[in-house]
Image (cartoon, rainbow, N blue to C red; front, side, top):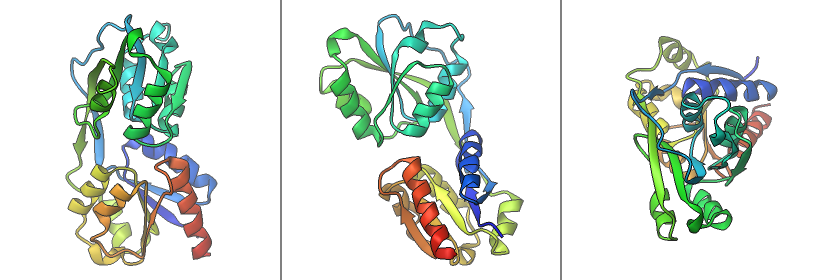
Amino acid sequence: MSPLALLTRPRPDSEHLAALLRALGVDSLIDPVINIIPLEGASLPPLEEVQALLLTSANGVRALAALLAPEDKAHDKPLFTVGAATAEAARGAGFKHVETAGGDVETLAKLAIERLDPANGRLLHIAGSRVAGDLSGKLGARGFTIERACLYRAEASTALSGETRTALEDGKIDMVLFFSPRSARGFVKLIDVADSLAQITVVCLSPAVAEEVAGLTWRRIRTAIVPEQAALLDEVAREIEIAE
């Protein structure tokens, strides 16, 4: 029987992740603990004087793409992403000049500083209503003018699904994957069958994520070597090897 992973990311991200896990022989149960809601009336500022776009999640890519016509010249602007998954989403949405920092907000700021010149125009950060890290502060300290366009909000789920609760109680889940501290915190708040976690391995994108679930009793806590989806999947593969 294939191992079963519980995926807690927003549904579009979880569906993409499930396809990658299938290639590793892992089945998935999707139960988002955070749902992405477009902000009503959200709009973009004029983009003519924006020299580059900064994206910190695939949610931002989807929200941005929804506001642009296919022929919009914004697709020709340089676009910098925090990680490879966001970069993949941006290319899929038609953006032609995409670079990834391969890490976090810190590495994204460094990449922008290396590639861009404050004299060439503003930077636009596409974000949600809650922002992690101080991208604006880091770039502002280097002379950049950065504007933020908030296009969506993240809404926490109020309960785990019945299917998830049953799978936990029956010991059917082998792994739980977390990509952000917020989703990890959301899961901890919703879980009421903590005893059922003792045979489950949790796989986390970063130490900050792992810290949020460290208070629960797991079989193992695995943390990606770098905060990238590919590195997290490497940890999943290692867990499968041990289980076999």
